Length: 284
Length: 265
Ligand code: SF4
Ligand code: SF4
Image: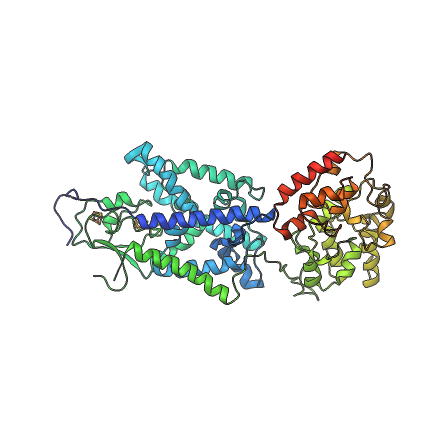
């Protein structure tokens, strides 16, 4: 039974999810190094032991947008590589088990937005990430599905990587090259600015890959559950959630916006042990 | 069973890198550009590679393989004198024939391939040019329609244009194994001798500069050998390629050699 007592202040705040921060840093540095190495390799100065692949080759979303062409003609959209398809399959396997864990743990653009969020939190304190009224916000959260449909449709029709023209992820790791489109730089600039007010604005409102992975939250094998019997209704989980999901009102989180970051869990912010957790198998 | 962040981290890293390793083992992990063009979807050539989808990143080797055209024909059609025709990228055409003001480029290769193979090709809105040798080859290979003949009558680069061009770069400079026909295309300066009218730009070391160019520009062999710390390699070798093969930084080497060029002027 959920506690009907008034909310007690948790006695001790548990450590934040440091492991995730390290994993995110690792992938950010890895991708940044590969992007730099790609530029160096074009001048014959690449570092031998490090991949010099183009970022298009390391983007799982390339596999998603190329899927239609791959199935119908057996070829990939221009600039997309077979490795993108492999990464897409890996992303799907991860999502089948844990939802959009790629977003919460791997995606360097998500990590970058979280780093900027630290500045925003310092400036706006509690108001940070709460500027948009939730009614409007809830509707805006579906915008990314429109982006997803648009990208898939346009790519299938033009057989070119239309998304590259506005992709902030590519712009972030290629802003020093002539390969980056002006549209990508503009979207990146807007994302950086918006990240000072909203946590992960690109992920919430525009990312088509996040939209795709978000669908897996409806049936992911590792389910994120809140134990109402031990919950003290302190709402710390709600405050910790970068995606503004009200975990404290749910028994199982199936929200399409959850990025499986585990910040709400009892291993991170929830102060009561074994109250919010990713669980495999039956509810305990 | 509860999943802690530590387990989640192990899960993510293992699935991601494990998946990549498995795909590498299966030979499915390719991060190189996909070179397969789209296929023609209609007519009697349906299922064949579509020349309209030839890209500037292709090499002549790719074109030869994908469209089953002998490299020798491509070399003749586009006056490629490099020893390794297969390795020459299409995008270098525009650079090498810069004096033709972009008349010859990837679009020309698309047009050549389509006509050579006898594939249907929409000429409306087309403005690619071909060299006379390319047109000659096409005529030998296939029967052209009147529309195609009319097009080529306008869009063939005249021999006169190429012969009177003041600055022609190394694609038409005579190489050690160059034929007479090749030398006939050399600019008025003759066998690579610098034209006194050339401006500074033409003495600037770039990706297409060979060791022969350095000698032509007046740099002494000993000075080059001192800079590269070994005997002069094959004169027709691109300095950039040599630097990459020897593990040198091209930009550093370029700066050192440019200083020699500037001093020799
Ligand atoms: S589940 Fe949320 S509201 Fe309940 S105790 Fe944990 S942090 Fe507090
Ligand atoms: S619900 Fe929990 S796991 Fe999902 S995004 Fe919010 S904090 Fe992260």
